[in-house]
Image 1 (cartoon, one colour):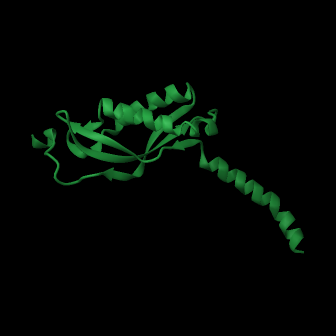
Image 2: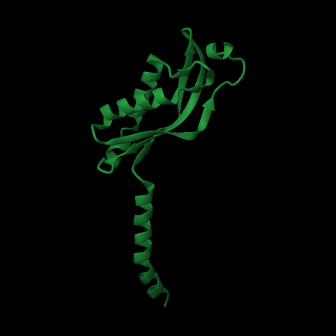
Image 3: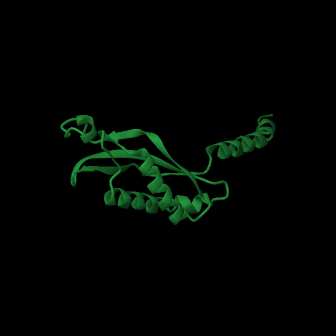
Length: 140
């Protein structure tokens, strides 16, 4: 009796697993990254971010997940070249510039037609919240 129930429930379990895999979507989550905040040529703070690269339906997800360190490296290099500093708040980053830079690097790494969008996930935050200089735009 138990075997019969088990055998009858097996197709349902397989269908549920396939449905969960479809809901999961195609994406690459990057390991948390600390990006610099600089003003007047000085390092002021670091902001930790969690990012997700959403892939298109035709993208090769396992291949692109293996390239996660390359995505992270490209982001860190871009952030050190021109920091994503907001000049009204040194505890946050300019999300538009960050997404644009990572999207451009991700397309170069993953190939055209494989990257759908970049998403900033909740969590992370600044390394320091106090003892920072007053932002330029906030002083006005």
